[in-house]
Image (cartoon, rainbow, N blue to C red; front, side, top):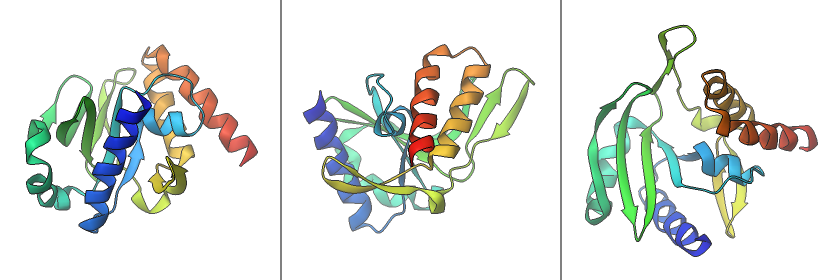
Length: 164
Protein backbone atom coordinates (compact mmCIF):
# COMPACT_ATOMS: atom_id res chain seq x y z
CA UNK A 1 0.00 0.00 0.00
CA UNK A 2 2.81 2.41 0.78
CA UNK A 3 4.08 2.27 -2.82
CA UNK A 4 0.59 3.01 -4.15
CA UNK A 5 0.31 5.97 -1.77
CA UNK A 6 3.83 7.19 -2.52
CA UNK A 7 3.39 6.97 -6.30
CA UNK A 8 0.05 8.77 -6.22
CA UNK A 9 1.42 11.51 -3.96
CA UNK A 10 4.44 12.08 -6.20
CA UNK A 11 2.22 12.13 -9.29
CA UNK A 12 -0.39 14.61 -8.06
CA UNK A 13 2.00 16.94 -6.23
CA UNK A 14 4.21 16.99 -9.31
CA UNK A 15 1.25 18.20 -11.37
CA UNK A 16 0.25 20.82 -8.78
CA UNK A 17 3.82 22.12 -8.56
CA UNK A 18 4.25 22.23 -12.36
CA UNK A 19 1.04 24.28 -12.57
CA UNK A 20 2.20 26.44 -9.63
CA UNK A 21 -1.04 25.73 -7.76
CA UNK A 22 -0.86 26.13 -3.97
CA UNK A 23 -2.01 23.07 -2.04
CA UNK A 24 -1.81 21.23 1.24
CA UNK A 25 -2.33 17.67 2.38
CA UNK A 26 -5.23 17.41 4.83
CA UNK A 27 -7.56 14.83 6.36
CA UNK A 28 -6.51 11.37 7.47
CA UNK A 29 -3.27 11.37 5.47
CA UNK A 30 -2.20 14.59 7.24
CA UNK A 31 -3.01 12.96 10.58
CA UNK A 32 -0.91 9.96 9.51
CA UNK A 33 1.99 12.28 8.65
CA UNK A 34 1.69 13.78 12.15
CA UNK A 35 1.86 10.31 13.70
CA UNK A 36 -1.62 8.75 13.62
CA UNK A 37 -1.59 4.98 13.29
CA UNK A 38 -4.86 4.63 11.40
CA UNK A 39 -4.38 3.35 7.82
CA UNK A 40 -4.51 5.94 5.05
CA UNK A 41 -7.61 5.50 2.90
CA UNK A 42 -7.23 8.43 0.54
CA UNK A 43 -5.16 11.51 -0.10
CA UNK A 44 -7.11 14.69 0.70
CA UNK A 45 -5.63 17.78 -0.91
CA UNK A 46 -6.91 21.32 -0.47
CA UNK A 47 -6.44 23.63 -3.47
CA UNK A 48 -7.81 27.07 -4.35
CA UNK A 49 -11.23 26.67 -5.95
CA UNK A 50 -10.45 29.15 -8.72
CA UNK A 51 -7.49 27.01 -9.85
CA UNK A 52 -9.19 23.59 -9.89
CA UNK A 53 -10.20 23.77 -13.57
CA UNK A 54 -6.50 24.01 -14.53
CA UNK A 55 -5.88 20.55 -13.06
CA UNK A 56 -8.59 18.74 -15.04
CA UNK A 57 -6.73 18.32 -18.37
CA UNK A 58 -3.72 16.82 -16.59
CA UNK A 59 -5.73 14.26 -14.60
CA UNK A 60 -8.69 13.54 -16.92
CA UNK A 61 -7.83 9.85 -17.38
CA UNK A 62 -8.05 9.27 -13.62
CA UNK A 63 -11.22 11.22 -12.75
CA UNK A 64 -13.91 9.11 -11.08
CA UNK A 65 -15.99 12.07 -9.85
CA UNK A 66 -16.06 15.10 -12.11
CA UNK A 67 -15.11 18.50 -10.75
CA UNK A 68 -18.19 20.16 -9.34
CA UNK A 69 -20.22 21.10 -6.32
CA UNK A 70 -20.67 18.20 -3.92
CA UNK A 71 -23.06 18.15 -1.00
CA UNK A 72 -24.27 15.37 1.24
CA UNK A 73 -25.43 15.37 4.86
CA UNK A 74 -21.88 16.11 6.09
CA UNK A 75 -19.95 18.08 3.45
CA UNK A 76 -20.57 21.00 1.13
CA UNK A 77 -17.61 21.65 -1.15
CA UNK A 78 -16.21 21.96 -4.62
CA UNK A 79 -14.61 18.58 -5.24
CA UNK A 80 -12.98 16.27 -7.75
CA UNK A 81 -12.08 12.63 -7.03
CA UNK A 82 -9.32 10.72 -8.79
CA UNK A 83 -8.27 7.08 -8.78
CA UNK A 84 -4.57 6.89 -9.56
CA UNK A 85 -3.79 3.19 -9.98
CA UNK A 86 -5.93 2.20 -7.02
CA UNK A 87 -5.17 5.19 -4.78
CA UNK A 88 -8.06 7.58 -4.24
CA UNK A 89 -7.22 11.29 -4.28
CA UNK A 90 -9.78 13.92 -3.22
CA UNK A 91 -9.08 17.43 -4.47
CA UNK A 92 -11.13 19.83 -2.34
CA UNK A 93 -11.81 23.52 -2.78
CA UNK A 94 -9.93 25.34 -0.05
CA UNK A 95 -11.94 28.50 0.48
CA UNK A 96 -15.62 27.67 0.69
CA UNK A 97 -15.81 24.18 2.16
CA UNK A 98 -18.43 23.67 4.85
CA UNK A 99 -19.09 20.86 7.28
CA UNK A 100 -22.43 20.17 8.93
CA UNK A 101 -22.27 20.61 12.69
CA UNK A 102 -24.73 17.96 13.89
CA UNK A 103 -24.51 19.16 17.50
CA UNK A 104 -25.75 22.67 16.64
CA UNK A 105 -27.63 21.75 13.43
CA UNK A 106 -25.84 24.32 11.27
CA UNK A 107 -23.38 24.42 8.40
CA UNK A 108 -20.03 25.80 9.56
CA UNK A 109 -17.21 27.07 7.39
CA UNK A 110 -14.26 24.72 7.16
CA UNK A 111 -11.86 26.74 5.00
CA UNK A 112 -8.31 25.61 4.50
CA UNK A 113 -5.62 28.12 5.37
CA UNK A 114 -3.00 27.28 2.77
CA UNK A 115 -0.68 29.97 4.12
CA UNK A 116 -0.36 28.30 7.52
CA UNK A 117 0.58 24.83 6.28
CA UNK A 118 3.85 23.25 7.35
CA UNK A 119 6.40 21.94 4.88
CA UNK A 120 7.30 18.38 5.91
CA UNK A 121 9.29 15.55 4.38
CA UNK A 122 6.92 12.89 3.04
CA UNK A 123 8.43 10.05 1.01
CA UNK A 124 11.49 12.25 0.48
CA UNK A 125 9.43 15.16 -0.86
CA UNK A 126 8.92 18.57 0.75
CA UNK A 127 5.12 18.66 1.01
CA UNK A 128 2.81 21.33 2.50
CA UNK A 129 0.66 19.72 5.20
CA UNK A 130 -2.28 21.35 6.96
CA UNK A 131 -1.33 23.18 10.12
CA UNK A 132 -1.57 20.63 12.95
CA UNK A 133 -3.64 22.96 15.17
CA UNK A 134 -6.18 23.44 12.34
CA UNK A 135 -6.26 19.67 11.77
CA UNK A 136 -6.81 18.91 15.45
CA UNK A 137 -9.65 21.46 15.68
CA UNK A 138 -11.32 20.01 12.59
CA UNK A 139 -10.98 16.43 13.83
CA UNK A 140 -12.40 17.44 17.24
CA UNK A 141 -15.52 18.70 15.51
CA UNK A 142 -15.90 15.29 13.87
CA UNK A 143 -15.42 13.50 17.21
CA UNK A 144 -18.05 15.70 18.89
CA UNK A 145 -20.48 14.39 16.29
CA UNK A 146 -19.80 10.74 17.11
CA UNK A 147 -17.06 9.94 14.62
CA UNK A 148 -14.90 8.13 17.19
CA UNK A 149 -12.35 6.84 14.68
CA UNK A 150 -10.85 10.36 14.66
CA UNK A 151 -9.87 10.17 18.35
CA UNK A 152 -6.51 8.57 17.53
CA UNK A 153 -5.89 11.21 14.88
CA UNK A 154 -6.41 14.02 17.40
CA UNK A 155 -4.22 12.31 20.00
CA UNK A 156 -1.39 11.89 17.48
CA UNK A 157 -1.63 15.47 16.25
CA UNK A 158 -1.69 16.87 19.79
CA UNK A 159 1.32 14.73 20.70
CA UNK A 160 3.10 16.14 17.65
CA UNK A 161 2.20 19.68 18.74
CA UNK A 162 3.50 19.05 22.27
CA UNK A 163 6.98 18.12 21.03
CA UNK A 164 7.29 20.46 18.04
